[in-house]
Image (tube, rainbow, N blue to C red; front, side):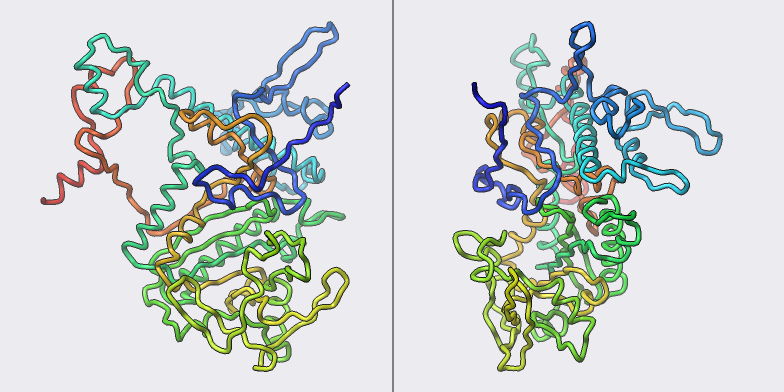
Length: 518
């Protein structure tokens, strides 16, 4: 008989044409995650066999789903989320007509309260499974709402709608606009990410290249995290704590850059939060300054060298713990950055006595050799002591590194040639996985196409359940619905199809044309 054990193999070497490779990376750490296989496979309902032998299906939106799926967490059979939970007025204690959403409910379950023990937070990997499962429920509920409303609300280009009505008086409105659209208002959707990438390019058109590209990664050894852990726990057990602390640290970093002008007065900025199957969250930040950084100022802001231990021991400690890449290559050929025997991050870098700028993107930062006055440090890799010099240092800002004590990669954007890649990199979209089950989604169903292969880690699930933003920017970019004459999209129902065909709908593009003189 064939074995009952199957394996889902994530193919990191495969990705759809035109998609960013970092979306389809293989996981580099052990973590609990969920891979959504789309609606063409079985649902996530629970199947019960009753004592009578009958089979009963329990939907994930049923109040008993949580208790049946997680009997260790809810051994008393407590009700979980359902659609009829009413919000309570905190002033009167009475129920209101508003309903509690799944996001509200599971955010409530993750809270830490005084004099109230939350045993869910003590369950380590079971806790991680619970939060990824519940966030999948939240996202499925939202996508289901969009899908169900598209059966009543169709869309079509106005000119096509008008021609259909004129040429066929018996046209069936249900045959118009049958494509299932996932709108840009859905956070993390391809349309949403594409808009943000276009917003970044709008900043480039208006203000030129950004000055700095900053990557800020959560440090699990921060004191703020360790102080909140329960006895026997590590930061990997409490992704709710790491998410909250990183959110506050990121807020402080942006305040440092924007309001305290540590690099100069900022004109505009944007950031994106990612996980990339590496566990801890990290932020990619683009900053445009009013007074552009000149090449001769780079060494005053950015360093790619090991600091002197005797002059600045605090900075030395932070850099040697957080800003050394690998080492990989001959020292560790199994490092996650290695591909075909080469480091994908291009380490070790070349030594240079001075910073050199060119038109190919990032500058060649000053990395002095030990003979030229540079420093080195001894690290233990695979129980072997090796000497690491400035070739392995990730560029950093001494001020930011000393302040936040984390991995903060600061890069000077030297050329517009690299800007398009950076803007697309920062807004590349949700983590995905190409796996060996089934085939790709139907091309006309954007909702199923988004779900199929969606990879949600427990770190991302906590962040999204707590309603933390994955993007922020300033200033706001107003989008114009650019189209040809009568090419704007019109939304229609079975009842108003003829009325909508009589008058072309107004768009932001039309309004601008009416205001701006030709």
